[in-house]
Amino acid sequence: MFSKEKITLAYTVEKCMKCGLQKKRKFSDGDVLFAEVSKCNSCDGKSIIEKIFGETLEQ
Image 1 (spheres, helix red, strand yellow):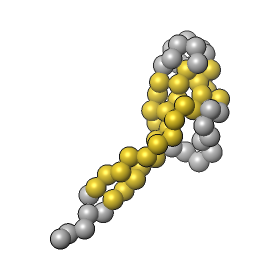
Image 2 (cartoon, one colour):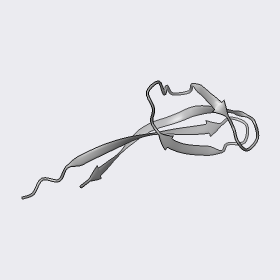
Image 3 (cartoon, helix red, strand yellow):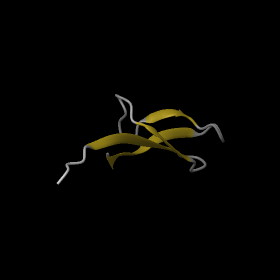
Image 4 (cartoon, helix red, strand yellow):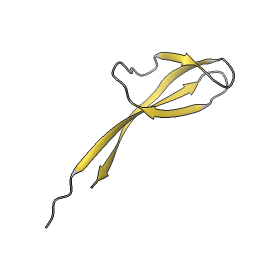
């Protein structure tokens, strides 16, 4: 009867290759799967983008 507005939010998951720590953040332009993005805050290992996904919210 009433149509709900759907909003899709994009997220990126970064994973450290040394200790396995994962961090979820909002997607930003230029994110590419398996790209090296930063140093791990926990162990100074290299973090790569492991997953990019979207979550749909209904309002």
